[in-house]
Length: 444
Image (cartoon, rainbow, N blue to C red; front, side, top):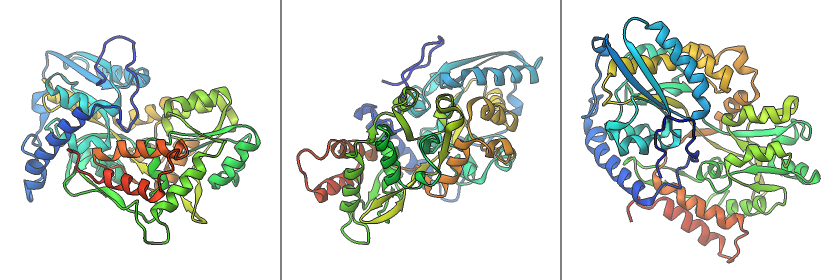
């Protein structure tokens, strides 16, 4: 079910970033909607830089002086920090309007489904990862950024690109750390140890400990394929994928990766578990290394203290070679609902929540890496292991741009590998099925 907005302190269950637990029917409906509108509004635009649904406008003329009621969707873990930002916003514009601003809990991974499912009752301002941008544009959900040049100049080029279609910036970037890397306990590992997955597994095994990863998540599974020379990506239609992970040619073949994954998954020191369970296993002492992102940095640091370490992903052995593990990189941003009853103030609020000062506050309180150039260049940001690690890993990553048919095949494939391929399916058949289903049409 979609994470609905609430006004209590109860949290909706956190959904993983792959959204693979959404119903197939909902995926298909949204995909078809996005595809049909993209073909009309985006691909058919020619040289135009706007969609048929939204246009650039100056909302300064729409700043009401009376009662202004705004709703912000965000994850509850960020409420304390966002509340401070909202209070400073009210102080900044005190006397210009009578503000009522409500925070409501909604998982970032579900923003697209929640907004497009009921756009007229969606929040005025909402947080979302960059991979949802095109669907949101296609669905007519986003009001483009008003102060385009100012926001573009203030943020990192990659973050601006991630929040744009063509030359139009459709959302306000606020973090540049939506990727993953390796956490490790320096009480067990040296910097040399964490360079290879083989050595990490060896050290964990020697100490009767584990290394953790959400192995059956397509988001993380990509790390084993990204730098092998096997190809994967989204087609020009913005809906379907291409995939050569089953290739029988080249120095690294699909079956080579499958064999390597079997070796990793069957190692007694390897633990496949949901990302949400990673922190629990770290706290219990069972896990001494793991692949995750900055959202777990505070909890990991609390568990390991001065021994908390983070670095790029290691290399792993494929067909006798050491291959650098890849990653999906990503950015988070705030969108303004195209149907907001107070568009001018909604833009003002989104701009405020993502400005340099508040990106710095988000970094200090939530260890989230800023996309603002000045905030990201600070010595304080560079000194945080998790932020330094995600920056280091980004050189081996790509923006997550995938069609919906990617996620479920990855889960099914990884579950078979994690179980040790109990039915003894030939590795080529496994890889053929994986690649073909990833590249299949979203509507069967």
